[in-house]
Length: 440
Image 1 (cartoon, rainbow, N blue to C red):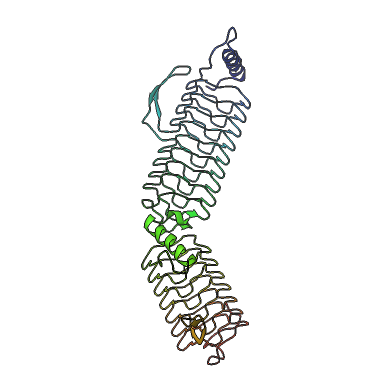
Image 2 (tube, helix red, strand yellow):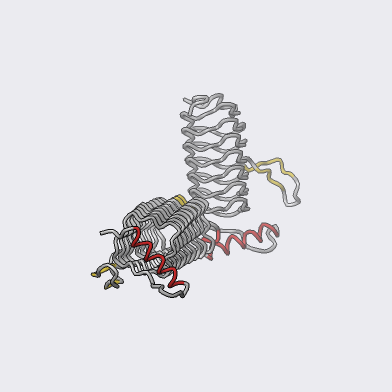
């Protein structure tokens, strides 16, 4: 039977005297006790024995449970907002539906654990390799879990928005569909963890271990992953934008040498050759890759805003869903490239004037080449494509609002269902075949 309020008060008073080394003090031993629904807000239970205790629907808001023995305790739907659980033994604890908003779990141990037997007030026999911690549906937003051991815990769908998980152990932990936006996971060990379909927008994973981690379908938008090795993590279907620091060292060296080559006008450094290289989902905003060879390279989903690809070779490259807003693509070879659903708002895909050895104008121009390019659904609003070669390019559903295509060679190009409101069309193409002005 649940303890009566008066019985609980006596235990708390004696425990507080024990903590203060006062006469008649006694350490609280509530192991396996039934405290269902007890109002313990603000209670001081530091170092108390609560292994296996039934604390279902208890109110422990603002309570001090630091260094407490909560081995395999049942805290289902307990209110633990602002509760201090630092360094508590919480192995095998049950926190299904519990509210731990801003709770302090720094250094807490939440690994496996299960009770075998034990009566109320008795120290129970423990199985440290028993059942995992149950946190399904728990609210741990803004909680402090620094250095907490949560390995092999079940945290599916848990709310960890803004939580501090620095150096936490999350080995083989189930975090699928968890809310981790803005969470600090720097230095955390996520080896083998399941984060499929989890929301990690704006989170920090700097220095984290991701060997065997599963991020399939996860949202990793704006995640800080500087210096993180992702080579052994599953990112299939994930929304992710990586830092150049996440690229293989060999590719980083090529990019660095190319930057020197550009800055020195070819006197030193080496022109980049990255044919077939995987640069997908990488933040390369503002990079100068003019003159680089990127034939067949993967740049799908990459942030390439304000990048310069003047006279670069991107033929056959995958640029689908890439952000090329205000990119400079003068004279760029994009033949047979995949630009489907790419964002090219304000991009300059123009011809480049050819100059002689003396630097003087020759009166000739080298056009950007988009022949055979797949450009379905591409966003070219306000883009400058003057004199570009667009023969046999597929611009089905493209948005060409206010774009300038004057002087383009658009023979056999497909403009079905393209938006051409305010578009300057080439003389040979008064209106693209089957185009629908203003249509989506």
